[in-house]
Length: 105
Length: 239
Image (cartoon, rainbow over all chains, first blue to last red; front, side):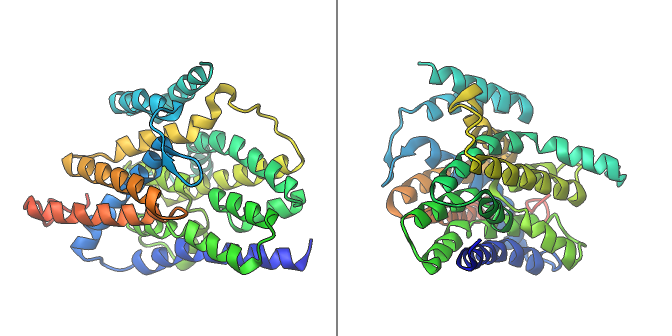
């Protein structure tokens, strides 16, 4: 293994670790103001939506809108299924099955 | 009732809860390993990157930059911007990791990924879940990621593309975990705003800065919406 590569992955590791580490250390042991608690309470719903939606309605490099793709067509019934069942395991299995079937067409 | 501290129970709970992530990591990790090997990295080098960085999309980008002959500094800066979104996730997790000492927090920080964050933040609402189980989950996912990338690095694309819809395991998991985060009309509004802004920003901004931008904007709007609804104070805060 070359020293250059070791330095590269160490650098990558440090810049990835710090944003994961700093908030835990800074925020976990102090009393947070109410607005910040509320803000943080909205983060999971917001970040999951921000991760999911662009992935199913955009494609390519540079990105452009592409609404008619299997991922979106499958995501709609999967979303409804998750809403009705609230079961993670069942949703993952049904999602995979639907995506597999969608890939056959 | 609080969660059992029995080591075997903790291990079992953490490992079994991690299965959707492990399933989802397998095809992505193998694909990454194959790509990294084509870029000239040995299985050892691939494993080292997965161990030290443990962040899928940034690793894909780094490998494509390595193939393109990029220098170290631009690769490291790109990695930083791609992974900056974990800042928001760790902030949100901090509320659930009170009374933990710096050592455990530092170990926990290592395992914060999109997937482990989404799964743990949903689980932390259950009384049977705690930081010990979350740590086991993080490290189970970590092992699955390292192993699948290294196996891929030996040239093995053992899962044929598209088999059993395995590529959709993580998207399906995220969709269900999003649903579990919707605990009222305000959360619906925040999720829709975040999704809409993320799509718009993703078309305008380079890289994946759209995730942080859309999340921060939507959460801020959510705080204001809550205020305008008069739903402030103890009853409206985090439960």
